[in-house]
Every structure is written in structure tokens, then in C-alpha cells.
Image (cartoon, rainbow, N blue to C red):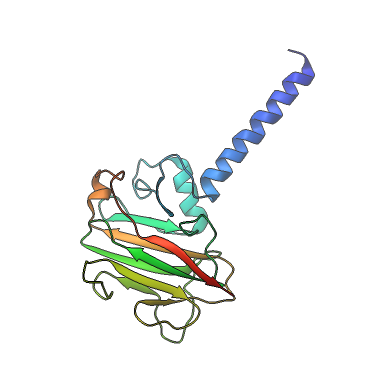
Length: 192
């Protein structure tokens, strides 16, 4: 192989290798991630045998992953239509939860994973304090403006939001099939 072709192959291989590693560590893709609608989870993130990309992802963000023995955490950084979650828009998180003994739904700033300050001190809902419909489903409105019912206060000044749905003591974490699970939809409402 001529020297020019060798150099070109090395450059292409390096770019592809670095690019794929960057996507695995920074993005919501990964070798062991599962995606259900707008939600992504890394079920082996807290395991001692998790892949190095998952470990690097959680080390980079400072998040403490839930071990498979405890449950699973699903993250949404975009709505069900694929648009980024932003504080300038309202969202309706609607549906049912997969089987779990207990769950939480928390809203964060995506940039630094901090909670969004608000006068109501409401940062999350859980399976015991949410208002449900007669059929067991629920609606949670994420909005900078107060709403009746299950309202998670956002902030119009926050560019990117992140919703984290943590399921504790769930069959999903212990090898249950994720193909059949139903996660809540995230529907975009009005934007300012």
C-alpha cells in the first residue's frame, strides 16, 4: 500500500474510532443502552461488568447509576417527536409506568444536572404522590407557568431540560423483556 493510502486509512480509522467513542460517552447511544420511545436506559450501568463506555459516560456527568439489583433509570432529553426538551416549551408526560414497586420522575437542567429552582419546591413526582386518572394512567405537565394537577415547574431561561424516570424494584432491571414495556409519552405543547 502506498504511504499516502496508509496515512489516509490511519486518519479515517482514528476519526471513526474517536467519533464513535465520543457518541457512546456523550450521547444517548451506547453499546448496552435500550430505547423505549423518548426514553433511554443503561441497565448495566451500575454493574461491575459494565462496558468502559458506560462507565466513562457516568463518570463524565457525575451521575450515580442505579444498580440492576435496585432498578433502572430512563432518561429523556427530547420529546416523543424527537425535538430537544427546552424550558421555552410546555410538555405533557402522559401514560402508564412499567411494573415497579416505586418510581420517581424528576426534572433537571441538562447542562449540569441541577434541579430547577422554583417557588413551590416541587422537583419531582413519585408513585405515591401523583394524581392518577380512573384507569391508572397519569398526566404530568412540565411548564414554566403554573398548571393545575400534576405540575413540574420548568424555567423559560433553561435551554435544555432532562427528565429522569427511575424505576425501583422492577422486573426490567432483573432481566425482564424491555420489548413489551410501555413508557410515558412526552408530548410538546405550546412554546414561548
